[in-house]
Length: 437
Image (cartoon, rainbow, N blue to C red; front, side, top):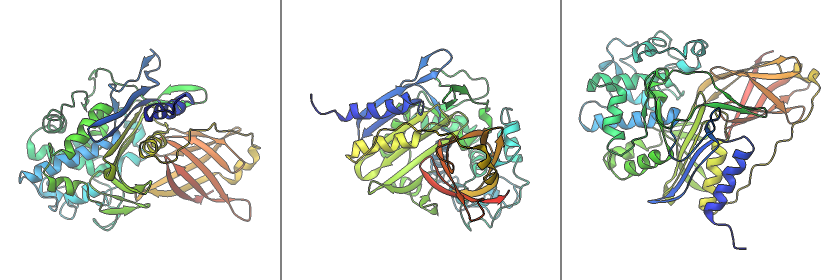
């Protein structure tokens, strides 16, 4: 028996996650112009048993931001705007528009609160809204800090960038992206869907649990717009990656601007829609997205000309672990197949020490997490996400599936009360402090 090929090792890795109910979607791995591996796993539609393939389209969430940034830089190349200009130049009358620049929006340093994390968003996310109506939902909110002072991830800024593109070009954002980015690259399976559009070979979104899969709530795509409204396939995103680095969208100077690390956070750095860090001793550039029913990532290791693309229609899928494992195989690094999690029975009386609100920040954005009890179950709620059960791995360590997989360990002090939660959320280490019991 010969040694397993790179392709077979990749297939075995992703299949193991799929078999354990931790992944459903499509993957593609390429080095330069050579595609090493591409395949679909699980179902695009579980009710009708329609399988995922490399040609199935998924919502890509915040990967849309990279496309929006490219559009802004295209307009800058044509002399139609400058990134350093106030946003009020184009959105006349917008509050603090004389202090907030287009670059602040691109870097998430504007100080504008994120409309997606407001408590009312989940109650209206199923309604169709115009871009101006989405912007009106947050324009009255006070700035969290002086523009440029620090970073706080905000979808709101990207809605404003979409409006800037529309004001300058006289085109709908979706039409501009299609004509100036998607069509030139042959991305025929990608776009920004309008309410009621029927998209050929488009996956539906789900949550996965030990009891099977369930549909996620309806999110009208108009509420994502230039911040997260695009859908695409792994094959189209590979065309995008090759076209961007092949000079088909931007000049080399603008590509350098696009891919420049700028604002630091949580051990990483943010640029114009991309995150920069290191893995396996190499620089790593990522455009990632998470939205209702879907998570995704496009990861580039520039020193090796390696790209790993993972699209999942499990909102709580282990997409980051899949992407990291595929990269490890391609780069000849150690990796492990996913192991079964062993849940234990815990006396519900311990839950009282954990109940309350915990706060943390991700990419500078404040995040509140409420831990509650329902009968003999410990539950967790994060704004914008469905309430989820915390499954015990030990009396203090728990597991949840919500917008990626999360492991949480309650940090207990001398009086047996938790004062913090140490988490690993979709591969990112975070600590949340308890603020109310």
